Image 1 (cartoon, helix red, strand yellow):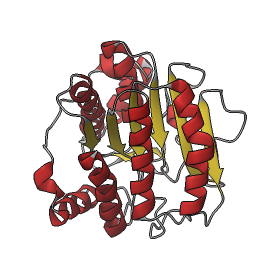
Image 2 (cartoon, helix red, strand yellow):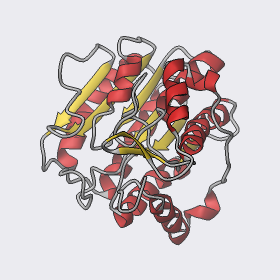
Image 3 (tube, one colour):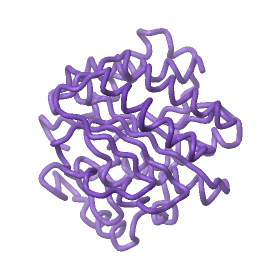
Length: 292
């Protein structure tokens, strides 16, 4: 997205390097995915929006969709592949080819609304994956778990009042995009946290708000919007999570999945901009998925 932008290619390098250093790299299977088609994207995005952002991609340099979100000549292809990765991960998990999957993708997606790009996000990859699980695999109950430091307004915009999809989330408030607190739909369990909140507040939210809602919903698949920018080292916000907190919430969600009769998890990278903390946190999350 341009020199100095926090949503940079080095984010994926940081995760890959830490994965190798941890020894986990030899325990995972690396796969690539095809780009998501217009038909797949149109399950959650309007056709005119897909056409508009595709046309907006420049031949050279950058085109800005909003003050935070830029396109270069390759951005639409990258965003389509990010969504395609989550779709492929859903297929792998639902067919039993693997139990869990983590999508190390850029750009993030959870701010992308049905017809609006924002907050570094172009296509809502997790929403695309959830819609694919419903349409292609016939699921009736899916859950999205979002622990990014920013509210997943795009995911809420897409699935609000859809009883098939439960979204549970924590996020710092007040903070961009300044949403998630005004009369959310019944299938949206949003838990805003004040600046400075850490592991204790996360645990309270998960145990008191998330888990009762998830167990009532009984999802057949859980998808993570896995943003690691709530880490205390991250420069873009003011929550105080640690790698251990991300590992703990992952374990809790795996336990919920098992109590619901399966252990199917698909996770997709969202935020996380302190590179060392991002690498450590993503690997802590991934370790729980590997040993599950």
